Image (cartoon, rainbow, N blue to C red; front, side, top):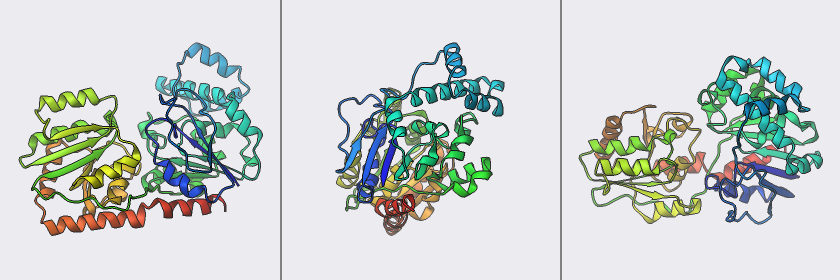
Length: 407
């Protein structure tokens, strides 16, 4: 059986390195696995080493985005051999009624054309047979070829979806070609129950093929230790982007009147802004931005230091991989109740925050955790690890996945 494993940028880029966990298990069950990244995403020379037995084809493009000249795009769309499908989407979804939907449609249609003209996609399409499985890790990007190829030639097409590529509410209530994509895919696999319900509500006719498939992580065989110096040691891990609301974390420390040291793993477009905010509130000794760490180094960072609590304040999520990593080393988690976070974060393993907490609310919850008896904190650590064992273990989840893919 051959598996084509479509990613956004892995093994390039900086955001998908955990896929190695899944591939290390899948490689034992397929005759051939080929990773097909959509784009380099700025990392042209230093891809991660693929697991033994996994080969690389592509990337399809240098970058994940491209310029859009509306007039030129219209001409290319109308003269394309896929014009009928493009116009069907145009009128069925009435994209002409909202400018933002029209732009999304133009961009997606133009992307389909460049995908279908891509040499790698042509090479893969020409070799399709009943021994071929298409696995798309995201519901945007490469997966947009699905409505335009003969999927009946494949054994199975499997599409994971997470957050930005799933929830239409965070996409101005329109994701182009979603209905034909769902129609052509054999399985749509949201990583959260919240995502599954969202898709079923919008597309009930595809309910039978929308199935929950959770992602998992691999621990490093160690447990993080709790602090022993009366300082609440907090860690967080995310891109420094608006959706992650790292500013909320920083601002909460204005209202904290007990010893705390917060270390944030991650980088991004808001780094300078966040560093300015830290200086503005004189929190240089309380909130430290560590920058990017390779995924395999994150767990080492957790277990080489003492941490009492992991915090996630995103305004939108699937089921966060970062939370599963914290559980894998026994760190309790405090997270906003968005997306699928509430499916694994309970009071027994930390604290589920309101979806949109004010900094004062976060500060109060930190104080409540700080004041817990040590025995209660120890129980939360033990139960956090048990959530990893039972719900987030990549070995078990990937084994279940490969059985499903080949059935």
